Length: 62
Image 1 (cartoon, one colour):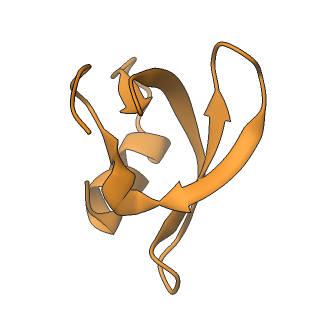
Image 2: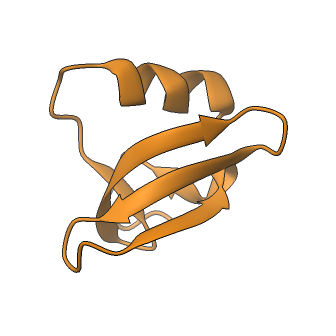
Image 3: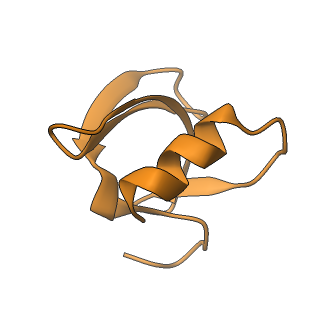
């Protein structure tokens, strides 16, 4: 995914599924300068930061 798409998804009110390593997550923030996103794991409620390129909207993608 790219920064622009991640930011749109974060601001969107829709329930689009987003995954990090096949784990459902919610985008909490986007850092355009670093190319990272702050995520919340929807299974464990833990927050973490990863490269925006590692998240996707299709289960099973890496």
